[in-house]
Amino acid sequence: MLAVQHAGQHRLASIPARAGIGLKPEHRMAIMQSLPDIGWFEVHAENYMGAGGPPHRFLEWVRERYPLSIHGVGLSIGGAGPLDKLHLKRLRALIDRYEPGLFSEHLAWSTHEGVYFNDLLPLPYTAETLAHVAAHVDEAQCALGKQILIENPSTYVAFDACEIGEPEFLSELARGTGCGLLLDVNNIYVSAANHGFDADAHLDAFPAGHVGEIHLAGHFEAEADEDGRLLIDAHDSPVRDAVWSLYERALRRTGPLPAVIE
Image (cartoon, rainbow, N blue to C red; front, side):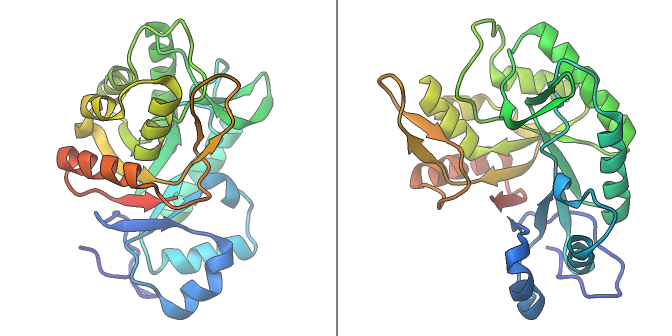
């Protein structure tokens, strides 16, 4: 188990198999005053792409004392167009600056012809999509000089064209590119409820050997247009009991791993 780092020491890069939390600016004073016994912190890359200022000063303070994971939400690794070279350059600068133990992105797309959307949108799981995403993962890992963990998404619609199950798609992606996986347990639960599949069976088929990090979060139930449940991965409520149970099931397959409550 990694000890908490103190200012002036060489910065630890690896992420311990302990609980971490998302770093929020509103907790700055509490963190600086108490130095909580937390295994590590995770930040969204896009919040730190400016050159300097208070966000970077705080993150530098944290990074001198705790391991850090960076979680990207804007690379659009499943997008139909080419990866944004400027975005990759900014990500590389952030990685070089803070030396995170882990870097992760989503199996999703969020851009089209230069337009950025506020949603992480689903992909059709086909052989063609797999080849396209694998090429983007290869390009990104080369540009960043670091392995990427790819996160399974929460989805609210699905493509009729899907011909590969999500666990198989992720397994082939990891095998072909050398990327790792970020297992979001809440996303499995949300997607299972929305699409009517068995969350336990889906988790049991998930390629556990490639998982390097686990996410947990809350969700809420929205009004559906038709009969049935519609769960939203909202990150604004406590982790539900059913998701904790799914997490326990996951740990029986993966063993201890870094886990963050979003």
